[in-house]
Length: 80
Length: 114
Image (cartoon, rainbow over all chains, first blue to last red; front, side, top):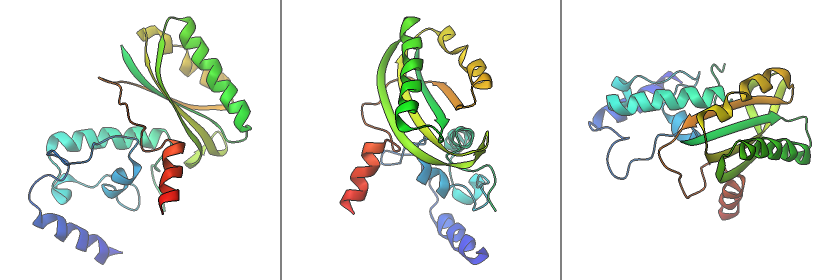
């Protein structure tokens, strides 16, 4: 599992620009569970933007969206 | 004001009963002068964690145009009603015409494509 996480981060580090900004970027929304799952760990924590290269603006939106989705039980607060 | 609201009802209910509950709430909103702009049914979903001892829930979403006071009672209703699990209300800037990612009809389309 640790190796897999490392692969993801190293791949993301190569990409310097924010993956959620720009024209073709997906909309950050609490209803888009697949997107939110990509930016959270397996345990359900939000990944830091220094790992994912998400811009500050989008990271704020992302964190709000994750919290909304958690409240509605769409994604877990913690999962083991 | 434009609002987006999500309601979650207990999975112990039959689909019809959940629908009825949803319609009752909509009528309450209409009575206070609100307009319903969009309705979505996300169907029966598994909850990520248990709420009031329920592991499944019916999800409904609406986009509406109404007064800020309209929703003030809803959180009180939840406390008294065992079958009303969650209510989320957020302000939105505009109503999206497309169905959201979670709508039941859309997820069915996806499975058919596969």
